[in-house]
Image (cartoon, rainbow, N blue to C red; front, side):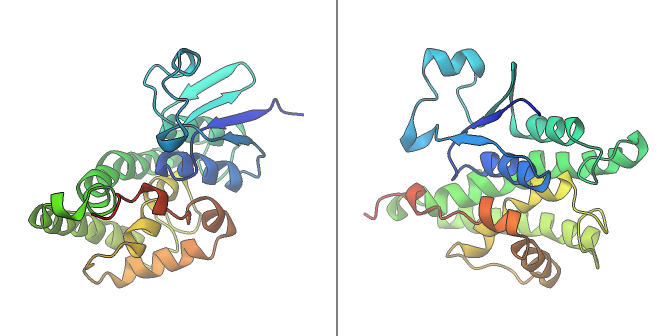
Length: 217
């Protein structure tokens, strides 16, 4: 019997969602505790002793503590694999890692702060609509590259869902449910529809984010 797994972090955090989705894909049980945002708890000495950044998520697996969502996901897939999420062979794993890193370090930052944050978390009177429009154009260029990579798919790396999908796919529920004008991307729309059909995605990523909205002014 494996040691218990605890995830510290609120369900509305996209980084927590990536971890929870990975756990579900691996068939692993865990206890998730609400930390961060309105729940607080992530700036206490006890939490900082686990995670000096004060951010979420943090994962505890027995005596092991890990923070940074991508590192957590890689650990889980490696520890409880081998699985298609994170192939054991380095040559097969490298392209998965490449696209997962791109999803985490390029695609995510081009969406979360310049698009999601001003549209959802900033009062309308303080929003720079021109900046948002420019960010959507830049994000669409990323989506064009991803669309070409997916092709017939069904997943980013082909036949199997991998950590590349985990890192990129967590963005798309928000992207497709925000009140914005989105350029048409049929391949990405089809990819998102396939994600929505996965119970693991529906449970852990399709999470209502109304609690993050800025108060109406």
